[in-house]
Length: 330
Image (tube, rainbow, N blue to C red; front, side, top):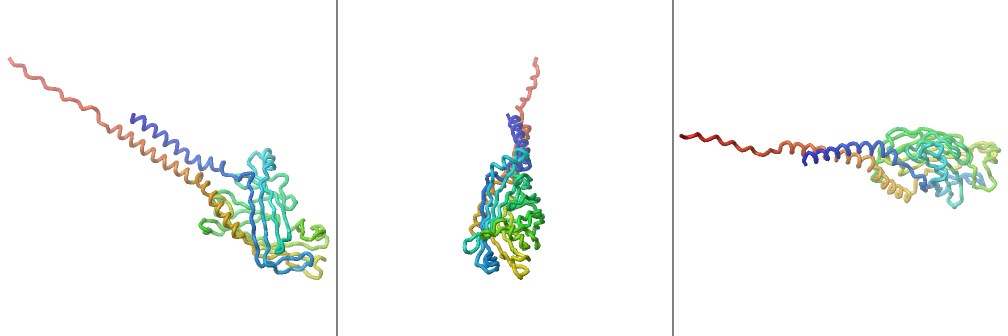
C-alpha cells in the first residue's frame, strides 16, 4: 500500500509541475483578451484654458473645457473581420467630444480602431479611420499590451495621423498601484481641420479654401498599470493654432485651443478601482496559480519520497533462533 501511495503522489507531483508552465505560457496568452463588447467612457478637463470663438475668430480665456472620450465595442464588425483575419479582433468605435464652458460643442472627432484582442497590435481592415479619413495605424492606441514592459512603445496620434515613440520614464506609485510612467511629445505639426465645427455652415472645406491651416502640438502623459496594460491616469499639455489665410484677416495665427487636460477626479478613482479588480484576475494566471502549482508539485514530490523511504526502512518479521539439539544420553 505504501508503494502505491508513493506512486500516486509522484504522479500528482508531475501533473502539477507540468501545469505550472502551461498556465503561464499557454493558458494566459489565450485567456487574457479584451472582450469584443467592451465599453468605457472618460471625462477630462482643462481649467483656465484658451479657446477660439469661431463666430468672432478671437481666442479668449475660459474657466473650463471638457473632453468626453467614449470607446464602444462593435461586436458585429469584429465578428465580420475575424472571419478573414483568422484571430480574435476587437473593433472600438471611439468619439472625442469637446465642450466649451457654455455647454456648446467645440469639436467632435470619431474614430474606428481595430486591433488584436490578445496583443493589442493593430489589425488593418476596411473601416479603420479617424474623422472619416482612412488611416493605417502602426503601434498602440488607448491601451498598452498585457504585461507591459519597461521600454518605449510606438503610439498612434489620432490628431496628426502619425505614429511616434512614447517613452518609458520610470516606475511610480499611483494611489497604491505600481505603474509605469510614459510620455510622448508631438512637435508642431499641420493636421486636418475637423469635419464638424461649432459654427453652423462653417465646414472644413470652406476653411481650407481660405488658405487657413490647423497646427497642433502636445505632450502626452500616461500612468499605466503594467499587468493589465491599462492607463489609470492621463494628461495632455495641448495646443492648437490656426495659421495664415484670409480667415484670420491680418493675423498670422490665432490660438484655437490651449490647456492642460487632466482626467477628472471621479473618473480617476473609478478607473483605479476597476483596474485593481482586473489585476487580481490576471495575477491568478500569471503568478498565483503557476507558482502555487509548482510549490504543490515540490511538496507532493517530497511527500512521495518520504513515503517511499519509510516503506524501505520498515523491518520485516523477526526470525526465531533455532534451538540446538540436546545431547543424547546413554
